[in-house]
Image (cartoon, one colour):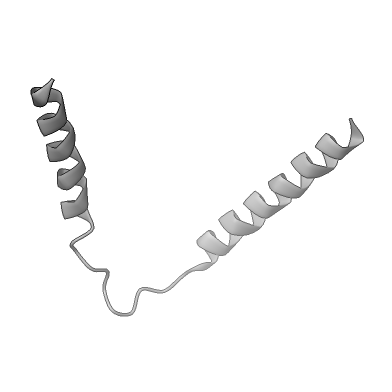
Length: 54
């Protein structure tokens, strides 16, 4: 049982190391991300309207 706790803690801490690196200072948000967000919003509105019709 202790081994599971130790392994779980080690895996969680390993994931934190991935966030230690920072992004470049001038990372642009290009049009692809905007299109992805717009598509997700449109999909959410469609699902909401379909759910309200039922």
